[in-house]
Length: 139
Image 1 (cartoon, rainbow, N blue to C red):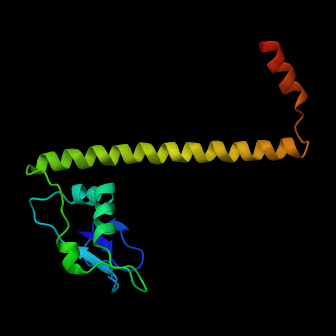
Image 2 (cartoon, rainbow, N blue to C red):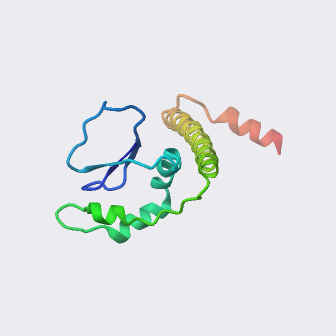
């Protein structure tokens, strides 16, 4: 099943792959799909820009932003009829998402390294002289 937050912070979505293991709060919808619909396709769809746009269009703003269940039931979802095609699309999006997460992790490590090096440079724990000499020699 898919679990979807529809009051307050609208839009976080989770894929639940076990039965009777979780308690749903009052601001969370459980979306049960027909057998012919690939749950991972819908999960990926609910994380897409298209559904975020749909949420923005349908959202009511009051003390807390919210969506009614009636509006959630009327979401326009692009769905290939062939379950095999749905599965292939979901798998491709999942693999792309994993690559993006790995790249973000690498970027965060590099940013952390840069921050540490900059800190060392600014506190004079690393001398810039050898770096400048190498740079001039290479030109």
